[in-house]
Length: 128
Image 1 (cartoon, helix red, strand yellow):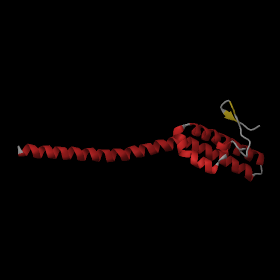
Image 2: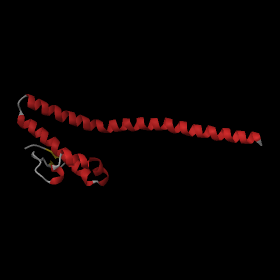
Image 3: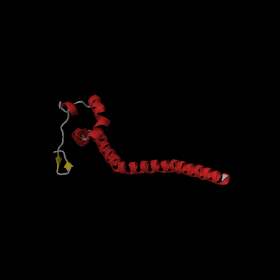
Image 4: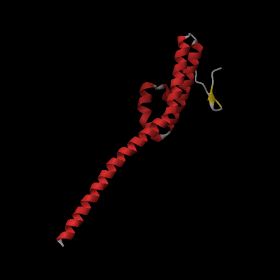
């Protein structure tokens, strides 16, 4: 009987150790995987932001201020639509509303934006 109790205890301890060890290793693998997938999903967005700011900087540097203004307005308009969509979603709204009220209250208050909003023409925004 004593031998059976010892085996039961050994099996329980080994299974609990395997479970916790697996959850620790699995958690690290999952976090790494999610981080890589997040970076992969954000890469096209980061590239688009880079190109936009690069073109903006080039336009300012060469004195083409109309091009720079257009580039800035296109970016602001696009991001404004994304922020408004987030504010319309209760789950997303809680993560950004305080910052919007502090940094860009015009989005919520309806005050003038301070730039020429560029509407989408189909799926694209363009300057005139």
